[in-house]
Image 1: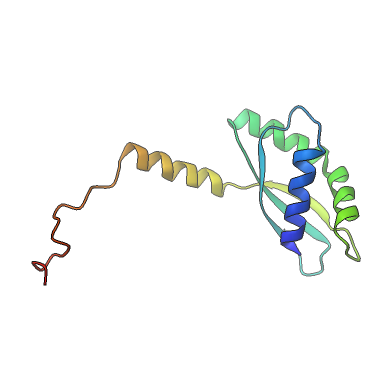
Image 2 (image 1 turned 90 degrees about the vertical axis):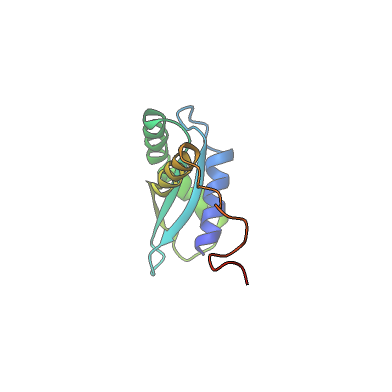
Length: 119
């Protein structure tokens, strides 16, 4: 169910939201409560902090529209109330990548394939 909601939300955001404040957004995952009444949509936003905030504000304002569209696409007894949340995990991944670029891992010091003299 979470995967189906993720795909629907991604399509709606990408194709149907026309708010110019919305930048490049990726729906990373969806968390649903066991009773299927609430869905937390985790998104990644490309850009600086100001661009992220504008995109998140626009998503929060479009919440009702996104919920209605999900209700039309995903057949459930209840259409879950949606909440958008910025996925900070992407920031951590970007930071690790940046650190690896600045400090590449040391190459293997010996080519013999082992520390015991190569059996």
